[in-house]
Length: 283
Image: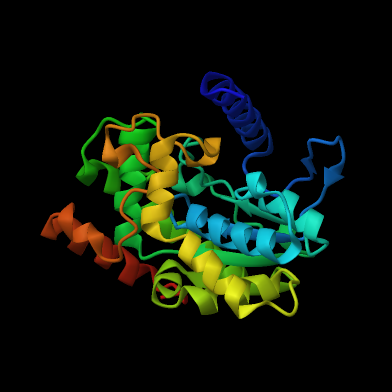
């Protein structure tokens, strides 16, 4: 398949995902597979956009592919891989916070009973880094926001109020799922091997090879993921709409504390005060 055909196929897949995401409100739902079967995920990896889930997708995908000798083309398709591996069907979900939906913070669902019989991995990120990455996703990648980063921070549909509301909702509902694992982006950065191993055990993978864990971490290194996206030859989930604009990349910086390059002191203080006032148990 040549590159134009590949791009066309990816666009069809992306459109189908967007249609399903909007129809379900980006909340738990059975998922139709390519072979016509319907799969109900048993594990949800819940996060706001730009929390590091593409990185986690690659880590999980590479480990499953090597452990169970699966199709490498499915690297970024955890549900397909987990079904093939006969472990707990696992899916990533933004739980109503997808940037494209642009929900107001007070529209976020408080009732998490739809997760009652599921396992949840809650992936979170330091709010200042998260909001900077979200801004560039909205402004440079998706092109759905044309204001300043300071305005974005104070936006009811994208900003810090939405982030802390989402985190607070989940901090107060973490006992609703039958099992809950809190995973921080910063912890993955500090110890990717231990983080990946804990995730794989949580989804039912047993007797995990340390070498496979190491291979997955090396494969998911920032530079390699950046190159995969730059090449435009991999997957619609890992492709840039404008390869010349580094801020439009999904794999953009991958840096803890990078917010200092973009936020003013007043913006930093505004975010920190908002987080402090929210008194969320995750922090």
